[in-house]
Length: 98
Image (cartoon, rainbow, N blue to C red; front, side, top):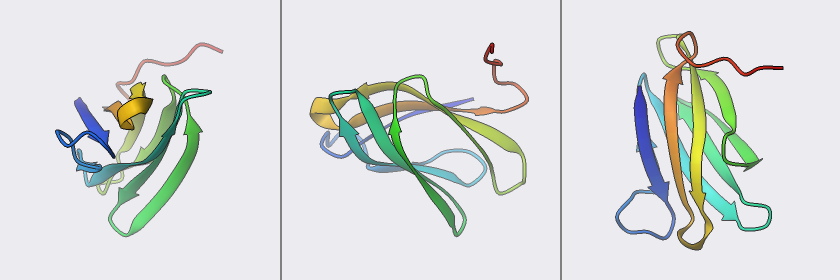
């Protein structure tokens, strides 16, 4: 549905990016060992920080409309503190197997 890239050190990308339905994703930090990212997700005045999320992490939440979405961390580049991510509607997102 939406794919974006955010970065603290790569000037080609912003630190935060508005996506769909009022959802804003911001990179706070990345770590090399183990490879993970700290991000913040905001919707309107609500915000929540997520620490130590590795590639493949799926974070569920709701947009301004009340519709459910999933933010997926696709790739992390620690040297430039860059995070590639996608936002999917939860009802269209692939389900994880137990």
